[in-house]
Image (tube, rainbow, N blue to C red; front, top):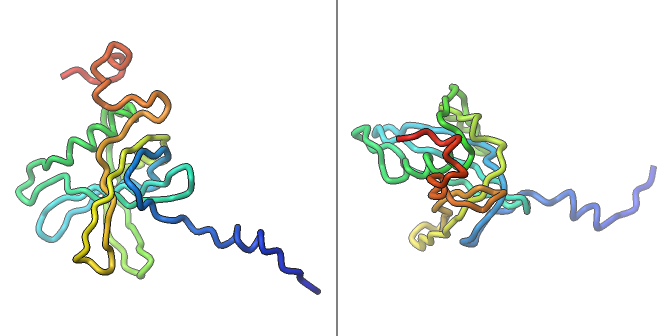
Length: 165
């Protein structure tokens, strides 16, 4: 058996998802959406976002303080629910396995996974961290089809599915 090198095919096979490294608006979906609690008692929501262009970002935000009260980022979860038209979401217990072999018990939110969503991400530089000199933060989601932000949920168009206060 003989093989002849096809450089184009070789390039295609090596295309691992690359990281989102620039601030901006992206369309894609959450591959994973889960919540975990730290040893100190703070609660974090993680969204593993995959953009339509193949790039990805791990969006990690504290939504519950150690004392159990909501942090500012809890509103971002509500905004995600708004643009995905979810009145409520329920978790299921799961395990996340990391590439280093470690695993972690988490609460998965399957209702937020695999749905088309737009996100505005901001790059935050941290020159003191040599291993991870930056991270991406989720500023706000938006409806991927209409481009409406969650604030538009108060318009007549959205009142049919957004719960009233």
